[in-house]
Image 1 (cartoon, rainbow, N blue to C red):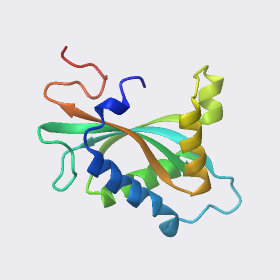
Image 2: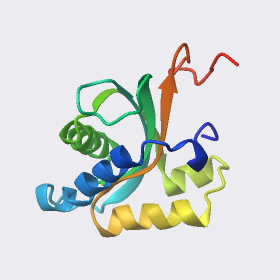
Image 3: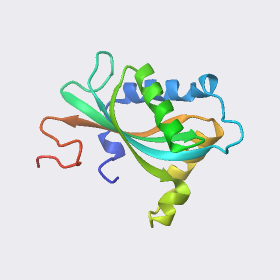
Length: 147
């Protein structure tokens, strides 16, 4: 997921709006009875919609999210619901599993990401960790862009 970099986050108002909505998620969704909450890493591709706050000329964006849920399906459903509340248009969601699953696959997870994952768990929240706007002829599905 190295395609995302903090330097590319030029849509701060959109990110702030998403964080406010995601933070309020715990008021709307209850923790599932009988199943422990886990945090799932999700990559969400969004298209354009009125009021989405994406930069002018962007054709959409990729959002790296950490979402709590009793299973990945719940985390996906709630992430999509949050993004729709933020006037975003989710097109596709790819799940990368829990922290434990990612580590078992040999991925190294940094301290900052671990902290955001813990926050998502503690607050029963969806955390938008990174956002990468797409411009022009970029191939958002494969991550390839015209260089």
